[in-house]
Structures are given as C-alpha cells and as structure tokens.
Image (cartoon, rainbow, N blue to C red):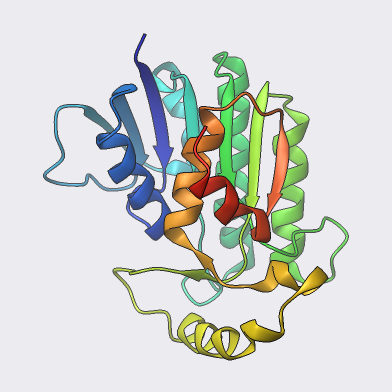
Length: 221
C-alpha cells in the first residue's frame, strides 16, 4: 500500500529536497505540506495546509500520515527574538511529535543540529537539545533525529554568516578526523535522502550524528 507523508518546512533548503524526492518516489501516494504560505506549481499528489505553524495543534484533524519529515529551522539573524526563535525551533517540532503520537503516526524524522545539548550554556544548542529530549519523550515507534554540522546547498536566500562558515569549514575539513569528523560540512542532499532512507528502514529510534548522515544517504535499504 502506498504511503502518505507530511513535510514541515518544505520551502526551506532541506525540506524542499525531501519534497522533490518524495514527488519522484512511487512509494508515496500523497504528500501533505503544512506551511505559512502555499507553494505554487505542485502536482495533485501534494495537499497543502496553510496557516500559523505556531498553532499547529489547530491542524490536528488533518495531521494524519504514515511519516512526518520535520525540517523546520530559523536563524538568529532571521529571528533575533529568542522567545519567537524557541517557539519555532522547539515548539513546532515538539507539537508535531505530539500530534504524530496522538494520531498514531509511527515514523517521525526531524532535523536538529550538531552540539544539541539540554545542558548547554549556548541558547541555540540548548534549544535544540530540549527539542530532541521532548520529541523522544513522545515515544513514537520510529524516531530519527539528524544532527548535521553546517549545511551546504543551494538556498533561495543568502545567509552571509553561513557562507563565511562554509568557506572556513572547507579549509579546515582536511584536519577533521577521528572525533572531529562530525564537524565536516553536511550536504543538504544527504540529509534529505538519509531521512527518507531511515523512514523506509527497519532501524530503531536513533540520533544520527553528522558523520553518519552521508553513509545512510548513499546506502539505500
């Protein structure tokens, strides 16, 4: 039986790649997008629900699927208000996980970040760590948390800070080995494919650190 997938963040870099891949994947009959704005030009395979994702619980009746791909994320530059930032990066994924549990969705994939840690003194890392902890606490049968390093890909928007970071990381990559290997640049393409591969695997709930993402992406089940 063909499946239904939900994507949160389909207009972003990783989410748009997940959408592209699922559109071309015969295992999926329906793709549901939950977003602030409608994406034009998509085929009938896609059903779009638009509204305020900070009130995602209002979509509960329509939040039904076999799998959820949560690719939501903001930046300090785009969202300088820490309260709003946390409502996005923590609130949306956690609410999505709770809705998934309530609606008996068995598979939940979410993009986090390297360094996520509930005990971190860094607000960004602490927020991601709290998100991971509370997503896992919902005990969805198959939960996959991906922790990429700095993400490389063709964005619709320019992020100056990330561009500088990519240049520096590219220079330093030859020195990243052993425990430092997890800091290598992560391709958005690999994140998207790894999420889909995990969702279609028999793997148990796990946290996937950045150095493992590429291997999961290129080794399809």
